Image (tube, rainbow, N blue to C red):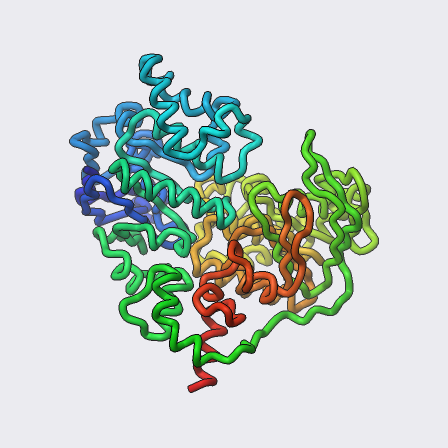
Length: 543
């Protein structure tokens, strides 16, 4: 159905001596055929070309991306070199990473109908397809709801429905769960699996959070170093992939064969392991001094006509790593925005030490609390990576090269000449983190910091944040990434409908939560282990 024939994609490079411009090769050697009715997972490190590969399927590469496409991509007999995206729209539906950015109408039903209107589908057929799509995706109950009022999972399903209603046989999705809480993510992935199994839709999906999707995949394509594998069996791919989720990491460490792809399979192989482990894992956590660097007292915030936070009390200590979790729309981002004075309090108060962020200048606030928002591009203004880094050093009055050194630790080798808008989502996040962390603020606020980051980049980020916490900085993460919280957090707060419903040590809050427990906790339940390293250390002590 989709044929890649020795496909390579390159872009004009920078001047390189007498030979002039050297092309920058993004992909090469892609040769595989995706059959109908398969869910194919595209796996690779941040910046490895996953989005470029996906955009080859509907002709965005090369018709809108620039660059040069070598080889051929043929979709149901149509060569993408000769067919532009509009010529493939009836066949290929593309769902972007941020569904809200693709919406062009106000309500669910209007958004699902819009694509068909643009394609001139007759009214009777359009009405039937809208009803079918609402039923297939479980959206009938919210058909008249404003898109802005939907949860993240519902918005993602509407984005899928908007392209599905046009009748494509292929769905291409770029990081569909990156902004979703665990329950909403599983809801979206179950929907995709139903489309594959029941309707024979072919699905290509790129996703960094493999723990959510690997057990749904029929085949896997690996990317790395510009090279592209053929279609691989998921277990075989995970045996060789440099990118793999905790369930695979545990299987590799303990020599399990075959490698389990799901928590259910891993629990079956872990029966003996659970019996051999002790009940008190050794944990190394940053020292918490107890000195409050930020306090929230009786905080209530309204956004429009909605109560975003109500009666929230928090004291954040130096050296603490606090993970703020909860479903989409629970108030996590609002809480972080309140700490830097961007979301005014209707009731209560916020203090950064003795500073009221609402009455302080931005320069005063950033010395106390630095925030990386969910959309990293909001704090990136320069024309190149190098200019962003140099500007951060100058703005914060730190030594030249400080921000660059932070970036090299999180995303080594990032081309300093690239424009920030040309970076992948994960690379932009890494750059924004480097810009903010260069100032070493007392409180570091990160809103979904691992969005777009692969596991290796996450490990490097964890090391940097642990060092900050160890040096007395407080780190506050608003995150859906339960694996990040398990690795890093000393404390977890869970919000629901703007209220604090849980607040305690990470091990206590996460291990017993069906929604927010990491993979390892589910595998060894009821034992209180959260990470692969904790289990491996305990096995070593027991042997």
